Amino acid sequence: YTRLALGKAKAYYSATGIPVPPEIAAIFSNLPPSPRENGFSLEESKSTLTKIGDVSPVFSLQTIDGQNLDFHGKVVVLNFFATWCGPCMEEMPFLEKNVWETFKDKGLMFAAVGRKHSETELITFQKQKGYSFPLVADPSGEIIGKFATNYIPRSVVIGKDGKIKFQSVGFSPEDFLALVNSVKAELAKP
Image (cartoon, rainbow, N blue to C red; front, side, top):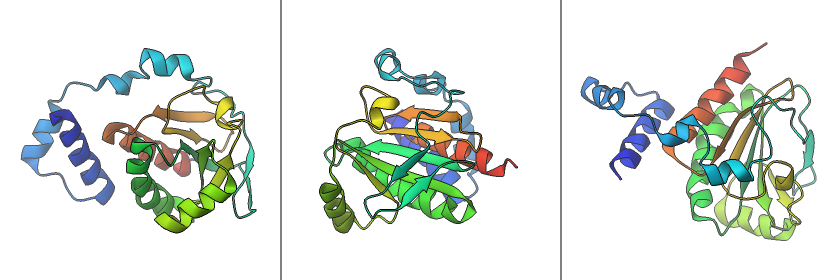
């Protein structure tokens, strides 16, 4: 629990841009590396069908409001979620504020893909929660099935070259910070 609390604090300072007080920075620097920073767990790895550096298996998606998202030449974040998934629901406000709202005007394309959810379910979800990012229905699991066989939430960053630059499973402050940093790095590329 201590690691989780410190990870949340670290993510807070990074997301808000507030300078980290020296005494807290010292604690951060003495933390041992998180096991997730070195890749997926064995089970997550077995369920992951794509690797960093692979060409994305998806180049466009249609949102629940009929918008066609064409990923060619764009930095893209795909987030796979389900409305019944606790960690997914915990992550959503961070995606809205720290990814979608922060980078949408800087060229980021974002889609939250509802694993095994219909358009109707996602329309209701969007009305209830008020999220403004694009939602994509994946009722048969065909879209997520190109990336993984199991485990959500799952985020993927695709670069302008169409290749996967970052992947994460679950929701942790460290992984979320790595996601944001990956987006920043890709958007900074010509």
